[in-house]
Image (tube, rainbow, N blue to C red; front, side):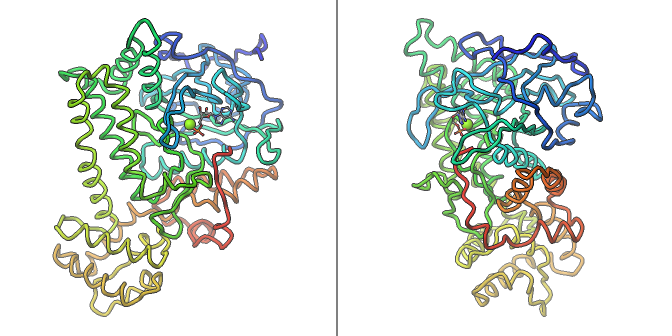
Length: 509
Ligand code: AMP
Ligand code: MG
């Protein structure tokens, strides 16, 4: 559907609109407008993300900005040149061929104080890459992506951001008939491993060899990894840099109990951002084998497997970059540090979660043994670490707050004695030390995470036309490490209810 002639809304306040992705050339995208939606309405917005973009206060309702129409795909700001990009990828370990933005529309970049930020509408209608899909996203999954992105950012984890969600009465068929929504995503780049895989694969059929692949790599290096240009082999340097960011992301995910659910190579960001929130989740009861995606029958993307899957995906990226690197030993060498770097970063995070300030040889065992106990007793991941902040090293302390979470109390007591001894060795044992440690731990062990049942509560309210709950939950998730008030604690920091276990999230979105 074409945009109406009055479709261009005012450009204010975005005089610095960029469309650099278009410079890559036509083989990288199809330019097209969004499909219109009837009578859009606001669902939610993140002022924090708006501030990142430098949008003025009141941006959502300012008549000159037409933000509701722009962020539902019905209008564009002057300068926006929407397009859908093409990529390929491996899905569940199998080459899936061409995919692409089947329901995402790239709007261009806003030059912000934090650097250029790309804006993308997700659910804006069909594109040439929609395959059998309808190009839409339902309200349920859009709220999950919106809250998930902003919550991860507040946890300090690299992620695409979400500016807002708009909704409409447009019916969308999934298992039942639902309604359409559009999420506006924000990131310095939406380039995925799959973009590289696509152009490496295309080269087999193209006369110009690896020109497109090289153009893409040079583009990503120039914009996001400029230091790689100075390397003897910039493409190997790029691979190494992406590996490091990915290792860091995996350490972040594991330490907070985040499960992505669909770690296909087309859902891996070259900037090491969490991207494409589908059937993601945060661990409730700790089970390393937890599979958050109902459609992942083999458990390929189970929580404990994520770091290895990321490494597998990095090999797929290496394979794609090989024609540019021109030396397979160099490519493997670029990936080599991943495992050690990841292990080191993860241990640093676990140590911080235990409030440790120094490193000792036995720390890995201390952590592993705690995780083993938590797994055996299915302790709540978030609550256990948060409660450990109140751990007292006083001889008489029973540390009931944490101890009561375990079924096997003698096993916890034995571990607690080792933990207390470990703290004593770094002289962190008087009441003042305990207090300082608690403060440290509370800055890395969140009290509030987006558990499935919390998202579900916001979704059900929104499906009934009440959007206040989404906004309330957002506010709480934007301060995950703060104690917050009693009503927030009761509503959002408790154990998940029994029914939370029956929530099924799948690729249907
Ligand atoms: P995912 O693994 O969910 O990120 O999606 C895999 C591919 O399917 C991507 O290329 C998406 O753009 C595409 N896709 C997913 N849902 C739809 C939809 N409803 N309509 C069109 N394309 C879709
Ligand atoms: Mg995807």
